[in-house]
Image (cartoon, rainbow, N blue to C red):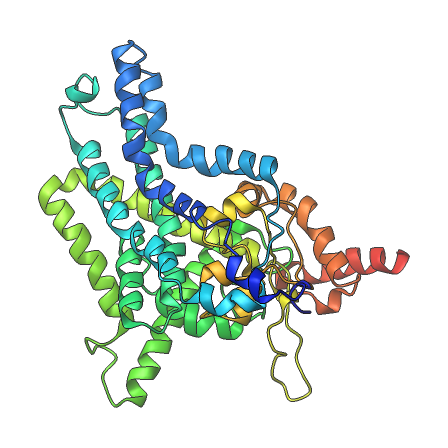
Length: 411
């Protein structure tokens, strides 16, 4: 279970090697700038008298997520390139890549504020609307801002794993939009410890639908993050209500953000906040669901779980979504090397692979029969038909073992 074989490089090759995706990483800025980019189109449609069509660009978030990214993944396919060992240190220390994530934040909050203005404005004649936005346009707008918040959680995920205090604070700031500041604690100190075990609320079980998983992960992660911080502060001799509680100070950022926006734009902003925040963190949980579905680390004789390996994460090397999500789909390498920066993550041998990119798979999670048709046989094949090694949902355990145990025996 190693990275793909990479031929040795000569010194000349090392010096000449260039990351072919270097400037493509700026695709990560598509999400936080999309709302501004579509404004000329909204104006043009209204000028042409296509007032119904003028509302469609405000749905740019769902259009990107559910249509454009899956289509581009299908067209361009897998990446197929890993950085060679000899360039890893140089690539890791190149600050250009971290600036690509830092710059996400000002565009993110510019879009949140601009979206709040559009949602509550009563006169948008400059865009060609007669008055303010109709509710179909408002819903599309809130979902689009929620999409950039969901991608923002992934940006925070990249920064929150780093040792630099600046990046950790930037991670919390990025999470404030989706009211999910506790993710900073739970993901690093909870999920990475318990991943691919029944004890992890963010690891989906075989036979568990996304709609069952969503509340389990949301409330389980919330509970876990609070307990982790309370225990840390207790060991330090401090109250769990101390200002250094990273759950509380992260949530405080959300209170300040939305308190200020409501003060400026009024209580009419509440639906915008709720729709965008819920859609944003639901996107995170959708990705959580597909990243470890059915996979399980086995218990050793000592009672502890085996070390996390490439076989415990679902991966995809489809290049477009990887550019959009900072190599999140190279998830096995991330769990093996949590502090490794996104540009150096590798596609690993021994890791099970999804049939397409995360963007394509997200839609499937909403339809349990379709999801199970695509994924259940892949879990079965990954474990060679041995269902005793699968993380099975307790509700369906007997039925699953009866069905798949018989099928494996016939095979």
